[in-house]
Image (cartoon, rainbow, N blue to C red; front, side):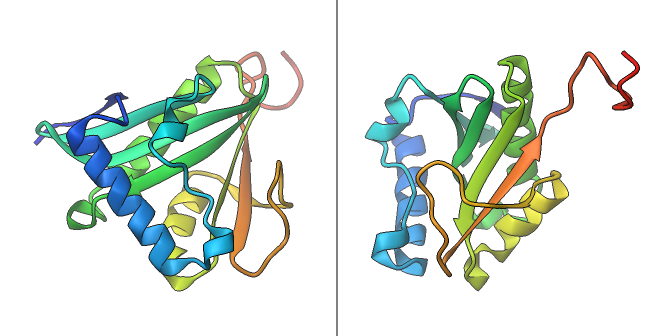
Length: 165
């Protein structure tokens, strides 16, 4: 079985179906005023780089990176099909999006996710990728339903991180 993560069209039938499952999940688990998931049309914004993960051609995951400014991006619309959770799809999506962020010159990537139990696997995935809790950013505010996390990307000019380069 081959997993391929690549840019995709959020309007494509299989992709749209998984995005609709993502939106239904967020609406079912989050109070209405605290749902921050992007609609399919919002994923067409030029500031958004959207990808899907396909396992043997079948869409099993989606994710996006939204440009906030020249050096800061936000992970959005991350979702893995329930039937393949725990098989590395989410990690492959995060890795792919972070690679794109680095190659696009971002210095930081942040995200917002839920605090409810249903979002515990997502929070664990992000923590494994190096994200740490942070203050709300952008238009997010402090509330009991959200947690913001951020990751400072390594500077390729100083791979050791000791300032000697």
